[in-house]
Length: 515
Ligand SMILES: [Zn+2]
Ligand SMILES: [Zn+2]
Image: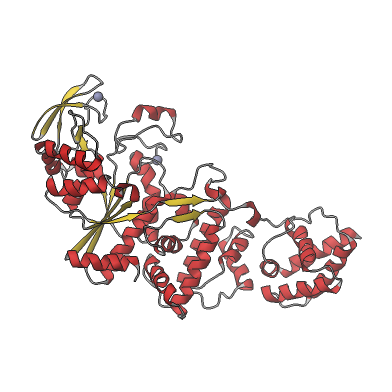
């Protein structure tokens, strides 16, 4: 049974309705691991729903977290903002409401594409609406108990002046003031900047520390299941303390935990070629087709680590997805493939299609995309080289999305060896007599072969045998006069993407130049 179905089954034994929670702290660039969390949560939601149980999913954006430091991608003036909540810091580009919006917006857009079906909540708004007030009050009433629990779980002594709540200074806007006294709903404080004042716990004038805030969210929403990074699941970590705090301080129950492993970035391709930054979650979404990205995370158990290889690994991932797609629609899966086929079904952002989507081999698409910027022309080329017959509007949408992903990948992360461009004029090549003779034979062979990948391949292959040059050297000759390289995409398919007249003309030019 697929792991999402196992979790759904176990949850059904515990609660009548389910609330899945997931979230993110958008203080900087969004990591690929955040995608794993959202995709994991959505798969569990789907599995529960398909079992016929009542289920909702919330996504909490931790917009009230302070900026911890000025990251290298931030301009100098952000030094000033460190310690302030990101809901209150201006956006770096000037186009968004605030810093949190700036970093989360592209991610939120892609959640729609990935089919993550959730209610969005901004933590700073929850504080402003007073939703945390009851929990904050409880931490003051039972402060000794809170400290005892934290001592016992973490094995570290809490300092005597420890408070689980930080008022926000009315002077400098930071969360660092010292607490002087508490009387519901006011916290009197004194700040290092010299400001003294009082914070109303019902009005977003302060926040709980992470270890107390997390269980407070469980209590507020009635969370029954939550995926989270395995660092929180370590012994003595924040899940362990959360379990006790939510019970002994807030009087609620901890959710079913789904700890997930981190996503490792593999290969030197993890740096974006032009921006120089490493692969972010947003990069991953832009260069991996949505359903494939879902599948890459859902095919393995959350506790197993995943390598995200932004170079050739992406192509392998799509090929694997396409293989399992065929298993789903055409059958023939063995026992080992059952969970993969289920992962495929869970990966569909908008549900399964009735018939199998059109498959254009992804590696072929990578080549065709490099021949034209125009989607219409691309379709014409594909018609010449692949069977586009019977393609639906849906199929073309998938193809368009895949095309966009390929382009993003080629511009940012693809290794040089897959890139090429057709030379507009005959490159300056020096051909020997063996190569010239081969071109003469190829010209004849290509003049009257059927213009599709397989026939062209056979024709060039046979031509290479005539004068004994062999396929390897013969194909090299062709690559040199078309793309100024010694290797390239599969010959038959490659030439089929080009117009026959253009191909013949180019070969002729090479022959004439030689004479
Ligand atoms: Zn912005
Ligand atoms: Zn201050």
